[in-house]
Amino acid sequence: MTKILICGSSGKMGKAVFEAAERDENVQILCGVDAFPKNELSFTEYKSFDEVKEIPDVVVDFSHPVNLDSLIDFCTKNTIPAVICTTGYSQEEIEKIHKLSESVPVFYSGNMSLGVNLLIELSKKATAVFGSAFDIEIVEKHHNQKIDAPSGTALMIADAISTVMDEEPQYVYDRHSYRAKRKQNEIGIHAVRGGTIVGEHSVIFAGNDEVLTITHQAQSKSLFATGAVSAAKFVCGKEPKMYNMSDMLA
Image 1: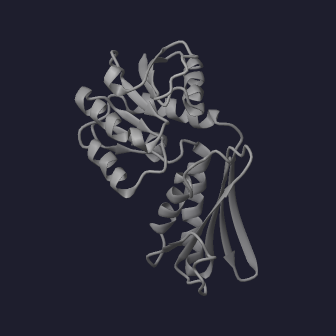
Image 2: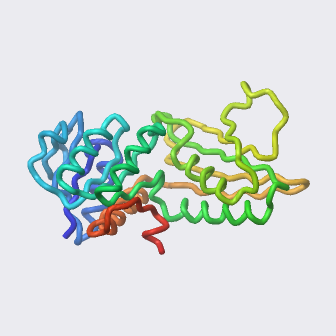
């Protein structure tokens, strides 16, 4: 039985993780941490990690970058693995996550969907085949409550594509302010925010007289929660290092 602490337990994704755990007989939600606990679910919620009395097997984090330092302190002090699903981290914060993985196992992914990770692999393959003959643009769409832009998934896709490009890429986020002819090594990244869109990511390969578009649409948040629960079970018992979806699917 894998006992999970949910960081961000009263948020939409926290509740989705609870529901995913309820469907898995090998998982139990031990407790939660949320700055604004609603106490609507069948486990104890604490306002901070300092108040937590239980010792879980793993922490699943769907919260906000502001919680990173306290999460790191809790996991380091108690030698607890972490599944970090929060997005919007700065480069300095990402370096902290990598530092944490030196002492405990850390599963870190900007997207917990199997479909998105397949999109990434297909995009890398297309980039390798097309080379510099096709321009690459990434368009991501999310609901109007999402704070960070572009999404962590869009950046994850761009970073993966970059590994197979012939030339070091330049990410371009706003062509309104960037008034210049498009360069071959550019990757355009565009964010759309509106309504209740759960998540959609498209990678556009535009060549001469032909366009290939690879798209993934998330229909509900439950697929991300299910992936996080699977990651929690996977990372327990592993040696300290950084893990991602590719490791779990190998």
